[in-house]
Image (cartoon, rainbow, N blue to C red; front, side, top):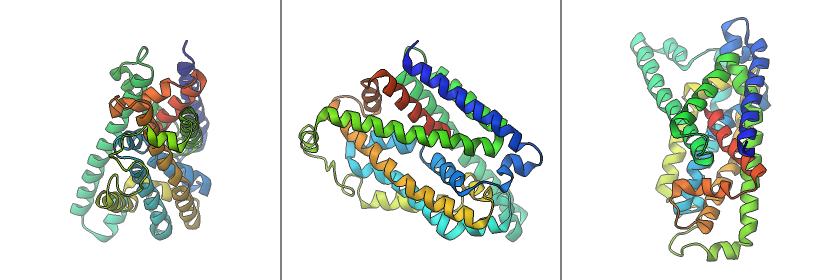
Length: 324
């Protein structure tokens, strides 16, 4: 059995183990299940917002974009981080003080039934799109890294069973506690892959020499451009202030100050991962210049030592699991 598959199986087993442990905490009233009994600590708030933000788009998507435009692709994740920090500084505390359960409950207090219905429909559409993309990304990751074991459809099915199962079993407690494992895997896996592959190239000078000359690879602005960066920041800051899946994290905090601290620290810790993912995309371009952007990162991972490749695979899939 391939080492990567063994690590993936162990990771899935660990997720379900955490979920069954969380099940005891989630039993009782609805708040225990949906909001972790409003007992989440600042570290759990922190890892949960990081887990939500650092998904496939913030890792694989950023690397793929950086393969074409350079380091500035990392601004996508930086924009997410700025949104989390804005939520922490300006709104997380206020939302928690309202003692509500959903964003539509808040709308109901200030507007009519029509606004509530519209709000619910909008949230359903948004969440359907988001979760569908996570299933697709999960299937793509498993198929790209373990093509002899998973085709795209079976990868999606395994992803869906895992995503739904761990949340169904333990509710918000499960989502929060499992993100401790997810975040460790994501950061360790991406960091190891980046360091190992950069060491193969040898130095920044050799990396620059191996890249096409017509792209601003190491500029933080020029690749995607200031307009795109501004649109990412505007979109993700406003999303952080209004989306139910983000609001629900702050509502699960044990008090208002905890919600504020958790989001601010989550945003700060989130900042480096986008830059790392973008740098890994640049390294992939230097190593596999003729490969399609979507296949570059899997090529980089497959080239790692089997144990490291397995950890990195689990890290990329963990990014998808955490968001879902």
